[in-house]
Each structure stands twice: as structure tokens, then as C-alpha cells.
Image (cartoon, rainbow, N blue to C red):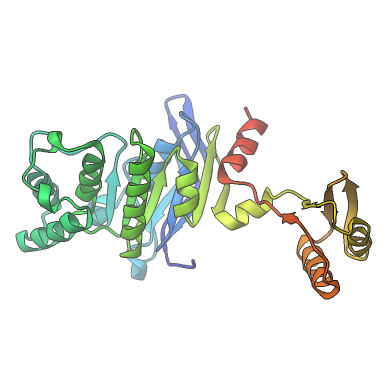
Length: 318
């Protein structure tokens, strides 16, 4: 996805007193992205989100916004008063008012942005339908289920129709079914043109929803970018062939030796192949198998999951 730049962090560091939280962060958020921010507790994720949302000013470096592209990039924090209606923020803990109804909450948050009453009501109507809260609009927020409360909280952050929505742990404290439900809703929000930045501990959900990832560890951002590109960097340098007793193992080995490989490890019913070029080797092998009508029980080129990549990075630098 090659969208227009919305927010850009350039060599950003953030400290509170003598406590350094983030250092030398470079990050670009483009229009249409769903950017996942992952990291252990205390790694600096929430600080990074607050910098992206403009709530914090960097100690060093620049956080720039490109919303007014004709005028060139400007400091996000220093110009937040002019562009706050373009950014939405949903914190980890609910920000709605429990003693107000669903409708009253949405009206309140809409009025904070000084939108015309008609615009607020039109926005609320769409959000109530999108979040399945229409039939609950007159309920007190405190009487909603956990999943409904989370949908209300996100709706409050969307009531002014921002261009970018920043979310801190939107699926925290929800059961797996509700986690998927919330993430599906956010993916639909993204399809409506809202760029998303999501911090979460639920890596499998982010892996399914996000096109980009930034991994925060010990105050630094590691391995940011498109998920597929990150995955390639951590892919294993081998693939395996599982063989059944009737497979022509010797013929498969002889075929592999004609292809660009470093070595083959024979483990009886399993061949571990270390290729020089995995794409050429696998393509050549499959072509030969088809041409000679050979049978292959299983070929496994398994790319590491986001969880595995995260474990590799965090175990290297503890």
C-alpha cells in the first residue's frame, strides 16, 4: 500500500526527566495503513502512541504531520489545535461516561469538536448502525456488556470522522470471540478510509488485520514495515520434504542436487533442504516432480508467525 504520508517520526527520542523511554525512532504512517505497534509492557508503546497522536512533544527529533500537504509537513504537537479534528484516540481504558446513555456520550464527544448539530447527528446515526448499538442508544453506558462498551468507546473516538485513529489495546480484557469482533469492526473502519494505528498484545489478531508492524523493544523500534517484508527477514533458510515409504527418495535427492542448494540433510522420512535461492529451488523441484510424475507427501516452507518474530527480537536483547 503506497499511500500519502500522514504522520512521520524522524529520529525521535522521548525522556521524562532522566528516564529515557524511546530513542532514535523513525516511523512513517501512510494513508490507508493499519499499523500494529507491538512490544512488552513498559517497552514504550503507549508513549509512541501519544507521540503519534500529538499528545506528547518529542525530547529530540521531529513528529511531523502531512495533513496540510500544500503547506508542507509541520510539527504535529505544535499544530494540534489546528488539526485535532483529523485525529482520533481510543485509550486502553474506557473514556466514555458510564452514567450517560450511549447517545448522550456520542453527542458529548461530538460537541467537543464544535461540529454542527446536524453533522453530529448524521455521524452518530452511521456509528450506531456500524457498531450494532442502535437498539441500545438509550441505555446507560455502564449497563452495556464489555464488548458493547468497547464498541462505544471506539465510536466516541470516531464521532468527528478523523483521518487517523490511534488505539491503545482495543481488545484488552475481552474474550477471544469479542476480540475478533472488535478487530473485524476496525478493519471495516479502515475500509471506510480511516488510517489505524493499533497497539496490542494480541499478535495473531494484528497479524491478520495489519499491513504494517513496528516492534518496540527496550525503547527502540525494531523491524518496522510491511509484515511480509519483515517475515522474509526472519524466514528460515531451509524447507523440508516429508516422505512416505513409497516415495522415490533417491530420485528426489538427485533432482535437488541439480538445483541451487547448499546441502541436504537426510533424516530418513524427512529431507531438510538448505537452498541458495529458495524460490528457484522450490520452483525447479516442483517442475521436475510434475514432469516425472513423482509423488511428494509434503513440502513445508513455513514462514515465521509475528509471535515467533517478536520472540526472536526480544530474546536477543534482554
